[in-house]
Amino acid sequence: MRLRHLTQREIVVALAKKDVLNPSSGEPYSLGTVNADIKALRSQWREKAADDTGEWVADSLAELEEVRRQAWSKGELAIVLKSLKQEAELLGLDAPARTELSGSLAVKAYTVLANPDDWED
Image (cartoon, rainbow, N blue to C red; front, side):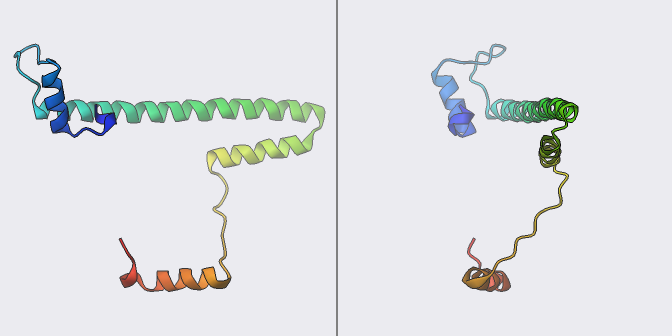
């Protein structure tokens, strides 16, 4: 229900309408219980997202390592370099690229950044 953007109060009401009651009391779940459950779910989702990302990165690194190993054995240095570049991008090892603005866009950006009182929220 939270993923459908219902508020916690709306969740309490919806559960009661569906006769989903607290088994220990037979009463509808309280706002505090719904709040605690949502916090626990968010924590689980964050852990799962971090695990999934870490697993994905590990799998990708293993694949790049295998590509590089085969490329080295065949003397395909262009592929070796490409795999090294992809690995560096995946791990965020490259320094951030510097972008220079020029022309009217640069003037507009400078004007906006130089006048923070004029910024809109």
